[in-house]
Image (cartoon, rainbow, N blue to C red; front, side, top):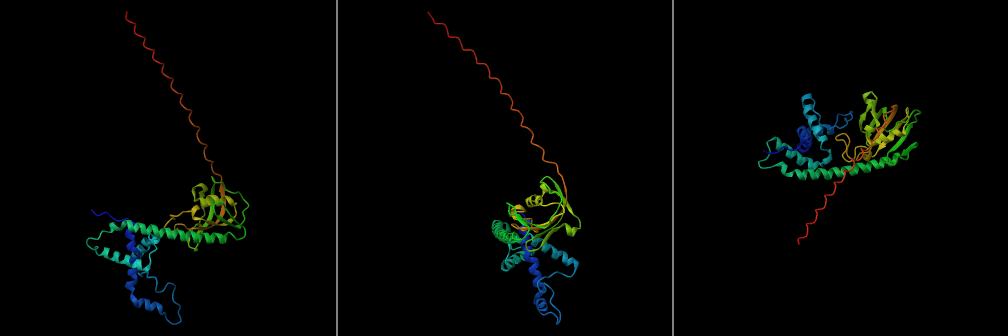
Length: 284
C-alpha cells in the first residue's frame, strides 16, 4: 500500500493550487476590470490581487487554501515554483499520472524546506537585530545581557515581580512589521500567569518593571520562540515586540529545596578468610 504523504507535503499543492487556480478562473477580464476602475473612484486596496469568493460555501473552500498556505510559508516559493506546484496539485486531483510516486521526492522536498527555512530565519534575525539596535537608542531604555531591549513608557511605583511570582498584565505582541499576533487588549481582559511559565524574555524583562508601569519590550528570538518559531503566527528567528502594562504581582511559592541525599549504605563486612589447609605429615 502506498504510504500517505505528511500534511506539509500535501499542502504544497494546495498553496498554489487554490490561489493560482482562482486567478486563472477569474481570467484576464477580471484583471482588466480591476486595472481600470470607474472614473472618480479609487481602486480598492488589493483590487486585481485577491480573489475571495462572494458566496459563503465558496469562502469555506477558499479558507482551506489559506490555512494550508500558512503551513508552507517556510518554502518561500517563487511565482515560477508555485506554478509548478499548481500543476502537481491539479494532476493529483485528477488521479495523478500513472507510475509517479511523490514519496520518492520526499527527501528533496524536506531538503528544500530546510534550506528555505534557514534563509528565512537568517533574514528574520537580521531584521530583528536592526530593529533592536534602533530601539536601544531611545530614551529610558536599557538592554539586558541577553539582548532584550526594554523601554520604559510609564514608570511604575509598586512592587517588582520575582521569577517565582505570578503577574497580572495587559499586553499586545507584534512582529517587527507591526502585525499583531496576540493581545489581551483586544480580548478586553488582562492575563495572569506565572513568570516561570512563559518565554524567557518575559521572565527576565518583567522583573525590571514595577506595578503600575508600562514598557515596550523587544525580545530576540533566542529569548522567545527560537529558530522554529510558532508557525503560522510567529516565524522562526523573529524578534517580538510587546507593550506590557504590569497591573499586579502575586508572590509565588519558592522552589522546594532539594531533598538531602540518602546516606550511603554501609559496606558489607568482609568474609573471614578460610583457614589454611594443614600440611600432610612427612612419610618415614
